[in-house]
Image (cartoon, rainbow, N blue to C red; front, side):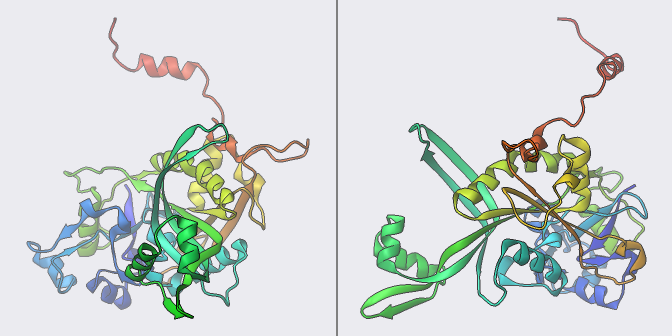
Length: 366
């Protein structure tokens, strides 16, 4: 049965006073802010109003978000990260000391200068229509986890022409969103307008199965029981297939967009998800190990042997690999197959499997 491996950032197997102090605030050490449930788990919020035992452990709050970072299917196995904040959080400019290595790897591969300042936006949605070379209208409707850019000084008059927006509207938008404005020689400037380089960062972690209310394996119930009973609880299963389906539908598109903008897209995944990709598709990621970015880029991180050899209550992910390559196969005979193979089946099961599955199910006649 699956169990929670990390709760509000800390390992249940190595719970200590530091973890307990962190729990009292329902704090996420990776966001350096109160846990938000990963940003997409609000339906699993936990009410403390009618639970005096939880209120003793978590102080001064009426509701908390579900603070499950990772699940472990069986003791000794690698945990599966189920919260994107556990892998990387750049929200509100906070830089957790527990994700230093991941940020350093990102900067190194993206060719960013550590001495310079960059801007980052989270949950950037673009919904628009654009014309192809054949003047065919195509829609684009995607949300980027993070967009990181350089900064530069630009006069509002120039930005107005670039964006096709009146200058006074540009200034209002800049002021509302706390950009730095300066008046120079009678003209208003934005001192930190976004500029190249553009780096799109996509984070893909596993999701959970729905769970069973009677067995208390729903995610919120599991979180409550883990808070009160430690390791003596049950948790939902891991739904890595659903995550892979989401990722494969966006992998090529978002990589192409990064290139079209003169930048790069980097996908952050856990190593166990990377292994699943290799086992279930025609693309074997180990053949794409690289030390530089290409058209498609997957940067994986994992716990490694720290789950068994490290007694710390809070772990930093350090085992990493970059897998990169072209979208489609190049023209030369020795060129790599393209990442487009990631959508192809690894190997079709023998036809006997469909007969066996059909024999094992009732049927109707039409």
